[in-house]
Image (cartoon, rainbow, N blue to C red; front, side, top):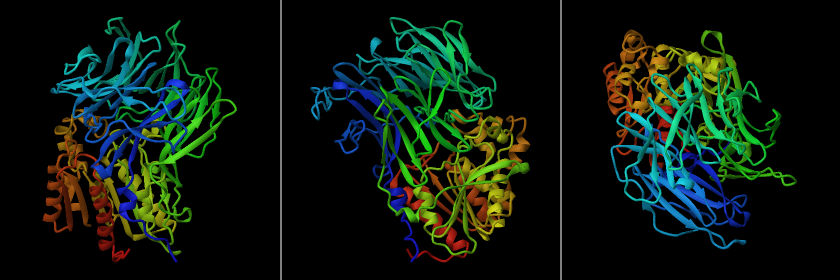
Amino acid sequence: MGPTPLSAQTAVGRLPGLKEPKLVQGPGNILWLIWLEQRPQEKGRTTAIMRRFGEPTSPQIELTPAPINLRSRVHDYGGGVLATATDDHHLHLVWIDAGCLWQQRLCWGEAGPGTNVPEAETPPQRLTCPGPWELADGLLNLQHNQWIGIREQQGKDQLVSVNLQRTDQEPELLHQPADFAGYASLNPKGDRLAWVEWTQPSMPWDSSSLWCAELTKTGQLIRPTQRAGGPDISVFQPQWLPNGRLLVAEDSSGWWNLMLEDPATESWERPWPMAAETAMPQWIYGMSTTAWDGERLLAATCSDGTWTLQRLGLDGTVLKLEQPFDDLAGLRACNGRAVAVASNSRCGAGLLELDLRPNTPAWIHTPAVPLPLPDREISVAQPLWFEGHQQQRTHAWYYPPIGAGDGPAPLLVKSHSGPTAMARRGLSLAIQYWTSRGWGVVDVNYGGSTGFGRAYRERLNHGWGVVDVADCAAAAQALIASGHSHPDQVAIEGGSAGGFTTLAALCFTDVFRAGACRYAVCDLTAMATDTHRFEARYLDNLVGAWPEERSTYNERSPLQHAGRIRCPVLFFQGLQDKVVPAEQTEQMAAALRHNGITVDVRLFEDEGHGFRNQATQITVLEETEAFFRLHLGLGTNSC
C-alpha cells in the first residue's frame, strides 16, 4: 500500500509562520521566550506569544490578542515589528500595528515557580499618531525613555525616536541617511548607536555601509561616521559585545564573515575566517544570525546551502554545537541559553531552545505543528550538483517521489523568489504535498542564490532571465538524463522573481510542459518604472542600467515574447499587490490567450505580494497540482 497523499489543508492550512524569537530575563532568574506567530487561519494576522524558556508545555500568553496585527509596511516587506526591554518591575513591549506605534507595560509577579506570570499594568497606549509614514525595526532605550527605529517617509528612510512617555506624537528625526537604513544596535552603556545604510541602485547585499554615532544624554545622535563597508561590500547585523567591541558580518573576503572592531585603534580584525556565510540577504528587518550568550559568541553559518551552529571564542576558536537542525534563522541568546527557528529534512520549523551552560548542555525543539505524516513517508532533500549556465557547478535540493515505481516520475521544478534568496533544506509540507502524490521536486539554487559566497551570488549580475533560466532547465535535464524524471511530465512554478524565472523558462527553453506563477514579474520595463521604492533600481544590477539598456529589458521580458510560450500557464495574483501590480498578470494572460494558449487566472481581492490567507494558500496548492495533472496527462488525483 502506497503513502497517503498529504492534503493541502494539512500542508499549508494549519502551518503558522514563526518569526523573530527573543529572550528576556525576568525576576527570579527566570528566562522568558517571546516569538511572533503569523497565522494563516486568521488571514495572516501576526501576534506575539510568550512562555518560559525551556518549558514548551508551560502556559502560553498571547501578548497581542486580536484584533492587534503586528505588521510593518516599510519597504513593503516590513519586519522588526516588536521591541522588548525589561527592568526590575516591568516587561516593556512596543509594537507596530496599522502604521502606528503602540506600547504596553506588563508587571512581573512575585518570583517563584508559576507565580511570576507578567500581567498587563495598563491597556495598550498609542505612542504615534497616524501619518504619511511607515515605521519598523525599533529598539528600546529605557535609559532615555525612547524607541529608536526607522521611519519611511517621502522616499527616504530616517532614523527616528519616539518618547515612551507621550501619546499620539510625531516621531523625532535623529539622523537623515542618504537613502536606506536599518538594523540599529545600541551599545551596553547606551551611548553609541550602530546601523546599516545603503543607497540606490545598490541593494543591501550588493553594497552597504556600517555607521556609528554617539547618543547624547538627551537622546540625540551626534557625529555619525561610516565605520566599515562601502562599494561592492555588504555588511549585516551590527552588534555590540559586553566589552564595548562592535561586531559585524561583511563580505570583502568573498564570504559574509564576522569581524571585530578594536576600539583603541578603530581597526578591524577577522578572528573566524571561513568559506561559509554568516548572514542573509536583508529583504526584511528583524533577522539575526549572531548572538552573545554571556560568555561566547554564537553564529549560524551556511555552507553549500546547509546551516550549522557555531560557538566562537574571542581568541579565534570555533566549536561546532552538536544539534540535528540544518536550517536556522532568528538566532538570539541570553545568559548561556539560546533560541532559533530551526528545522531539518525530517522535522518542520519550530523553536529550538539550547541550554549552553556548563554541565547542562541540552536542546529542545518544539515544531509549529505536529508532524502530520510518518517518518517513512517523508521525502528527504538530497543535494544535487549539476552543470548549469556556462557549465558552472550549480546546486539544488532534489526530493524523490514517495511510493512511486522504478520508472521516471513527473517532476516539479521550483524557482525560488528573490532572486537573491536560497532554496533551504528544512522540511516543507508544501513540497511533501507533491512527493506524496508521486512527483519528484527539485528546488534550484540557481546562480544568484545566497548561501554559497559572493561569487555565486554575483553570477546573476546582468544575467537575470538567462542564468536562472539555464540553471532551472539544466537541473531538470540532469534528472531526466539520470532516469529520475519523465521528459514529457516536467512542470515549473515560482512566485514573484521565481514567477519571472518560470515565465522566462517557458519562453526561452523547451524543457517544460506547463507552468504556474504567483504574482509573477512579467514585464521588466514595467518593473523598472512602476514598482515600490525598495526595488526601484534593483534591475540595474540584475539586468542593466535603465533606460540605457532598454533593449536588454525587452529581450528578456516574458510579456514581449509571449508568442514563444507553447504550453498551458496558470496565474495567481493578489489585487492589493504594490510590488507586481495586477496589470502585469492581466496583460500576460491576455497575450497568451491571443496566441491560443490555455491560461487560467485566479485573482484574490484581499491579497498583496505574498499570500497570507489560509484559504488562498490552500487554493493555490490544490489548483496548481490539478492544473499540472490535467495538462501533463496524469489524470485526476482521487485522494
